[in-house]
View 1 (tube, rainbow, N blue to C red):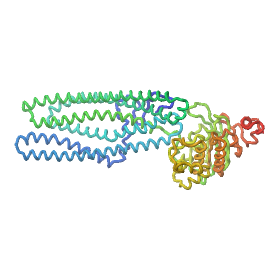
View 2: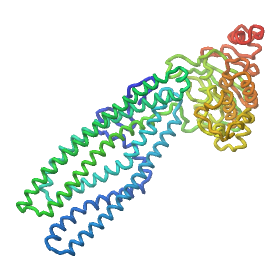
View 3: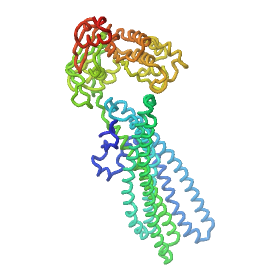
View 4: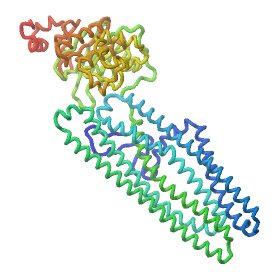
Length: 610
C-alpha cells in the first residue's frame, strides 16, 4: 500500500486494507470500502435501532396510503356515504402525522450517527497519524494527508448519515411497493419485474464509473492542497525569490486539473440520473397503459388500478432515489478507501507487546554498541557504521564533525524515530527496542536547531508535552531559560498567541522557549542540536547561560559546529562518515593533528588551537 510521495505527482494506485486485492474485484464490489465505517456505526447500537425503527415506521406509513386510497375509491365513492369518506380522510391525517414524526426522528437519528461517525473516524485517523514515524511524513505530502482528514471525512459523513438512511429507506420502499404491487395485480407486476433488470444493470455499471471519477477528483484536489500548503508554510522564501506568480500559476493549474476531474464526475452523475429517470418513466408508462386497458375491460377496478399506480410510483421514486444515492455512496466509497489507506499504514516504530520497564529512578546512562544504520530512502549508504559509544550518568558529551557525519542520526536513533539495522542502543541498561516508546521518550528532552512552535499561547508552547504543568512551573522554567523578561514584554505576556511556527519571535527567543520547554519536561537526558548556531553574540550568550542551567545534573549530548560552544564538555566525540574518528577534551584534540585540530584552526586560528 502506497500513498503519494513528495516526489510523485500522478495519483497513486493503492491497495486498501480490507479491500479487494485486485481491481477487477474492486469493480465488482465498488462499495466495499464503505464497510470500513461499519465498526464506527456499531459503537452506537441504541441510536442505530432508533434510526431503523423510525425509518421502518416512515416507510410503512407511506406504504399504507395507497390501500386507503383504493378503499376510498372503491367503497367510499360507490356507497355515497359521506361519513365513510370522512373516516378515510381522517385516517390519512393520522397516517400523515405518523409519517411526519417518523421522518423527523429518522432525520435526527441518522444525521446524529453521521456526525458521530465522522468525528470518531477523524479522531482515530489523526491518532494513528501521530503514531506514524518520520519516515512516513518524509515521503508523504502533509497537505494530502490533511485533505483526506477533512474533505474525505466530510464525504463519508454524508454516506454514514443521510445517504445510508436514504438508501435503506428507499430499499424498504422499493421492496414494500413491489410486494404490494404483486398483491394488487400479479399480471401488471410481472410486466414491471421484466423491466427492472433493464433499469438496474445500467445503473450499476454507471455507478462504477462515478466511483472511479470521484477517486480521481479527490486525488487531484489533494495534490493541489499539498502544493498550496508547502508554499504557504515557506511564504517568506517564496516572496524573497519573487516566486508568487509562478506558484500561483502552478496552483491554478492544479486547481483546474481538480476541476476537470470534478466536472467529469458531475457529468457522469448527471448521466446516471438522466438514465435512471428515463428508464423508470418509460417502464411505468408502458405498464400503466396496459392497466388502463384492463380497467376498461373490467378485469380490475379503478381503485385497485389507483392503488397499483401509487405503488408503482413509489417503486419508481425509490429506484430514482437509489440511483442518486448510489452515486453519493460511490463517491463516499472513494473517500473511505483513501482514509482506510491512512489507517492501513503500519508504524515502522512501535512499542513491544510486553515492554521491559525502564529502571526507576532514572540515571540517564546511554550505550550504543556496534550500531549500523542506513536511512531507508538512501539505499546502502551508511549514516552510522559500527558505532560504539558509552555516556555516563550526568556526563556532557559534545558531537562535532562535518555535515553528514551522522550526528543528527544519532539523536534520531536515541529517540527511536528509526531502528538500526544491527547493534544495540541501551538507555539505563534497557534496549530501546524492548522499552515502552512513550516511557523512553519521556526520559529525553530535545532542544532542536529548528524550533517547532505552534499558533497558541506562549504558556501553551512552553508546556507542550507537559500539559499538566501549572502556570507557576511554566514561569519558573521560562526564568531558568532566560525567557521571562521578553515574554512579559509581549502584549499579553504568557497569554500572547504566537503566529504559525512562531513567526513573530526572533531566533533567540524561539531557542529560549525551546529550552524552557525542555526544562519543564525535566528529563534526565538532554539532547541539544545546534541550539546556538543561528544566533548573534548577545542572544548566544543568553541561550548559553540558559543551557548551562538546564544541563546541570543531566546527561547531555550536544551537537555543535561552532566549537566555542563545546569547549566545556566533559568529552568531545569527533565523527566523520558515521564513525568516531577522535575522542578527548578540547585541549587535547586541538593539539592533535586530526580533524578536530583542523576545524579548530579554521574557527579560532592556529594560535587559539594551540
